[in-house]
Image (tube, rainbow, N blue to C red; front, side, top):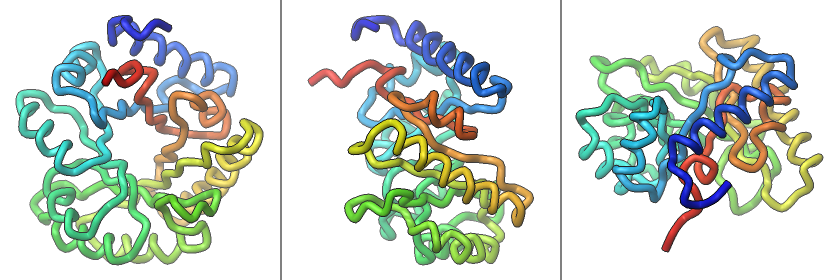
Length: 231
């Protein structure tokens, strides 16, 4: 795929990859949600993909995200925060986002729950799991998931929807597939205890097929949608 292809063409190609992966896995296409990772991308690029039918976008950096939200008030995309959550930024996330996918500690849960207005719809949250136990990566240990789900259950302004993870980039595809399988097992455990849990966010541009094969319900795609970064 050439870097200068129109982004709607890239969207069609990603949709085709998802459809083929679902077919191979014996799943229906509507079981997998496409989230466009729009960090560092321009407002015009987001508008183009929104106009082509993509309605969910994920941002990693709060200041950058809020500038985009403010400039795109004429559109109604669903905004996901997928980056590490700093405690001094929770109020903005609680007030402005539809989803926060990167919950990894009780302090963040408490602050988001207190700062989300009861007049708003409940803030959808995912617990980020450090599935490969990487020291430099955000996310809780798998053993902490149950404790964090209990903390979320105590916040009526939050709604636990599931789990998110980013497997280690420095491992073979087989090991990545194993990491996805471990996260799926945690997700299925969670589903058995919480009726609202329906989202397993895993898989990016390079591994969405393996993620879908292992049960992902949401893939987070940046480069394959927007093209490589241009300095």
